[in-house]
Image 1 (cartoon, one colour):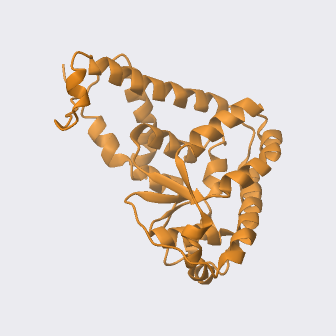
Image 2: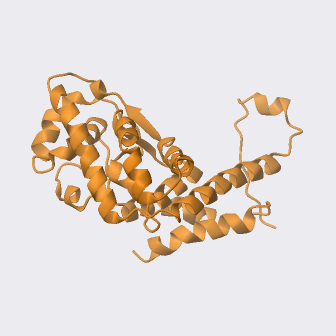
Amino acid sequence: MAELKIKIPEEIGFFKQVSDIDWSILASKLIKSKLDRISEVQRIVAKSKLTEDDVKEISDEINISLAKRYNGLLAKSSKRWFVLDRVVVDVNVVLSSLLTKGDSLKVFELNFLLNKFDFVAPEFLLTELERHKEIFLKRSGLLREEFDKVLDFITEQITLIPEEEFSKSLPGAVKLASKHLKDMQYVALALELKCPIFSGDKSLKELSGVEVLNPKELLSRFWIIINSLFRFKYSLSCKIKFNSFLSIYTTPILSM
């Protein structure tokens, strides 16, 4: 029977002290706990009554509110920094994850499991989401506890970047996004970090100078990892569930 082996560097002395632990069982429990949480999120989202029109309306309102705040920071300075696989998250993909159908949630589910992307967003994104929570609850039909579980699942994967870290790039963002000023905070952050934007906004795809990836395009970035995982057969207790879970994502990727 094939096995998935993990090589641990010798310099990590901790593992020598606990060499009697069955790491296969530990790995099995870790994977199962992640899959169980994803299943819970999927169960909740399946009940959502939120529509694509709701997502566009609410995300536009949030982005306009954010743009007004960042519009006053054009003169401030910031430093430049870059991390591989960092991606700026637009609020519309966060809201789209609450739709019963769509690929946005699949991106966050796979990233939770495989940890490929370092998602980032302007720090006031969560403030605006909280401010609009009652609208979400009313239109989605979800209980507050259910909504919070899904939102926590997503936002735990997003690092919030302080405004002073990317305010220097706001003038350039305003020029690039002159027809989409409600999105200037995402463009500025992408310019500052030299990374793409994860967004389902079709009009944002028209921008030049910044790469914008929609949910299907970002899902395709997971293909290399998923392809390598399918080469293994898991003898752990979560074998069937894990392979079934991955098959959900390979179908849309292969059909692109």
